[in-house]
Image 1 (cartoon, rainbow, N blue to C red):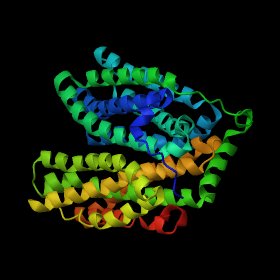
Image 2 (image 1 turned 90 degrees about the horizontal axis):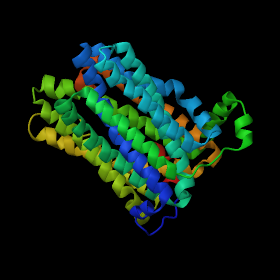
Image 3 (image 1 turned 90 degrees about the vertical axis):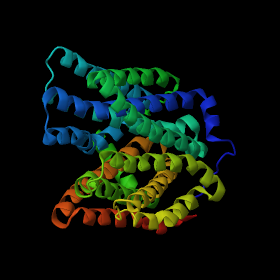
Image 4 (image 1 turned 60 degrees about the horizontal axis):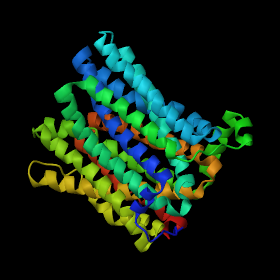
Length: 409
C-alpha cells in the first residue's frame, strides 16, 4: 500500500482549525507530562523518603494500568464522542494532579496518595492518547495521515527531550510540587484547545452493543488483518528490544565502567534526537519512495546499527554506540509515523478506538516483558548479555515487514 500524499508540507495542516487545536493540545500536555514524570518520583523521595522499591512501583503503575484498562478503554472511546473523552481525560488529570501539591502543603501527602495519582493519571493518558489517534483520520482525512502523524510524533519527541530537561531545572529551582502545578496548567491549556476539534457522535448501534462484545470484535479485527498483525509483531519486537538495551545502562555506564552520570544522560539523549529526526523525515521519505517502501528500506538499512549497541566502552566505544542508538531510534521515529498511518488507514472509523487500544496493550506489554527479561538476563548472564538480546531483537525487527507484500510496496 502506498498512500497518496499531498505535495504540500505538513506545516500546512496548522492552518486548519481542527488539526491546530489537536496539535497544540497534544504538544502542550505532552510537555507537561514530562514534568510530572520527573516530579512525582522526586517528590516521593524528597518529601516521603521513598526507597527504590517504592519509586519503581510508582513508575510501573502507569504501565500496569494500561494493560488492565487498555481494551475496555478502546471500546468506550468507540461508544462515545472522542473529543469529549479527551477533554474529560485532561480535566480529570487536572483534578488528580492538583491534589498532590495541596496535600503536600497541608502536610498530608502519603505514598498511597501518590500511587493513586500514578494510576489515575495513567488512565487519563491512556484514554487521551487512544482517543487522539482515533480522532485524527476524521480531522485531517485519510490521505494526509502521514503528514499529520509526522508532525504529531516529531513534536512529541521534541516535548520529551525538552520537557525532561526543563523538569530537572524546575524541580531544582522551585521544587517538585511546583512542577506538578505547572503540569496541571498544561492540561487546562490542552482542554481549551480541544474545543477546536470537530466532535463526531458514535452510531446508536455502537452505544447499544455490549462492551465485552465490542472488545472481542476489536481484538478479532486486529488478528484477522494481516497488515495489523505485522505492525503489532514489528512494534512488539522493538518495544521488547529497547528496555533490554536501556534498562541496565546505569549499571553498565556508571557502575561497571565508572563513567560520570552526565555521559549516561548524553547517551540516552540520542534516542530523543533520533526519534525527532526520524519522525520529521518520515513524510518526506514517504513522498519520495512511498509509505510502505520507506518503512521497509529504512528498516533494512539501519538494522546493522543495532548490533553496535552492546559495544559500549570508555572512549570512542561509547560514542560509536550512542551514534548507533541515534540511527536505531531514527528508524523507530520513521516507523512510528508510517506504521501508525497504515494502522489508521486500514481501520474503519467505528473500530479505531478498539484497534488503537489493542495495539497499545500489545506494545506496552512488550515493554514490560523487555524490562523483566533485562533484569533476568542481566542477573544470570551479565549486563552485556541483556544488551545483546535487545540488539538482536532490534536488528531483526524489520523481518515481519518482509512477510507483508502490502507494507513492502
